[in-house]
Length: 274
Image 1 (cartoon, one colour):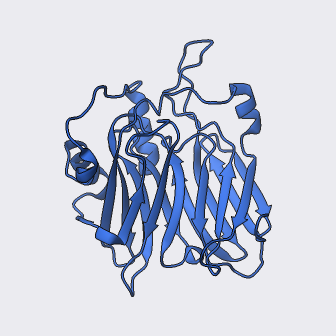
Image 2 (cartoon, helix red, strand yellow):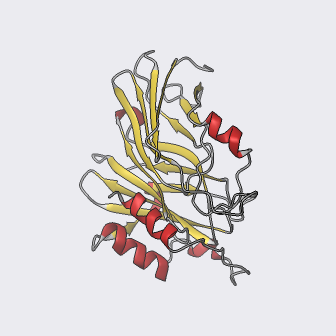
Image 3 (tube, rainbow, N blue to C red):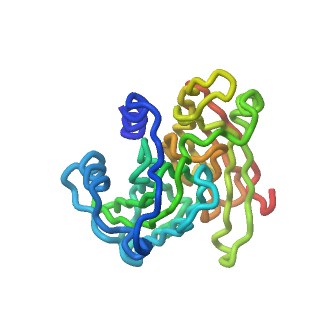
């Protein structure tokens, strides 16, 4: 069983999670990557006895210190591995979430050596948000930011349930110019309610079963951009923006799948502003 699914199953079995309340003394922005009991346990669960080194300038992770909406927390990631090395995979981990592994990405040649990607996550309690990258030689490096937010996994969805389910699987992909003309940006957006299993139906007062996108793949022509394995900690209507190295003018192909076994596909032009 995939780790993301295992974490979600364990969380759901234990019942709804409630966010920690109150302020934590001191300015924790400077200690975002400090050791903690939660991280010690997670690190052993996810990486066994492998060391995770401080990334330093190799990984830049931007996230709001105090989130405006705990269910839609924007994060930006930049990973620049040393010369001669590439990124094999990277994970977004939220220490205090009921299912901490929000997503695991396998980058393809289309993302290039330096990875620049942004998305939106749910944060259920004041927590370190981490990016852990594995290089092609097996080394692990991590960076973290502390985010003050609570209740993101149990917050009700923004859309009417019937409308959200009817729209599930609708997707868009747009291409944008960037400062580096050789590295434009693209954004893939997928309609999906991303039910976490901790949200309550406002009519029945029963918890809505977990239902979320667990696979996403973006390809241009024959060139892989990335594959993603996702969990409940990605926000409703997942959106991923990324810099890429174009493969000519061949169209993008997007494939997604969710935990109900439904698959969604789309083909999109690679032209700017499409």
